[in-house]
Length: 158
Image: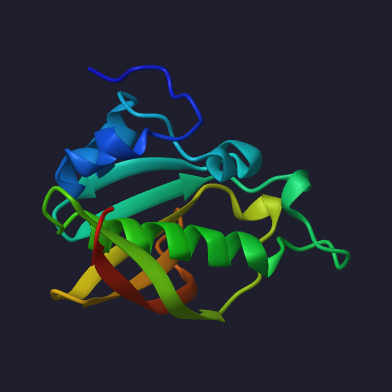
């Protein structure tokens, strides 16, 4: 059963006690709050399984750059979110991750007329110290709009 989505932060002791997959699934089903940037930008985390996370949004006028297309920072945020959470979904309780670097390539312009888009992150490797993932943003017709890769540091939560 899905709950109404809220925004905020999960207390560190609660996050530390959960497996990465349980944490990400809590974001999907609304039992945990989404991060506040998700509320600011209007995206949602809609699917999560071990090693794979999907983030969705319908871009609108608040996402535009001065040229009238969606700012590349939105694509970067969606990819950073889905790829990092995909790595998180593979981690045991008490283990966290943070982005060390990521790269994106913008393939097609995104506009409000593009309609709903989805960013899917998939883990490539998840080790004791480093995790890597790739991500793809596609439109409703499956056209590739942007793609990226990330490297995350894996660490024991304090």
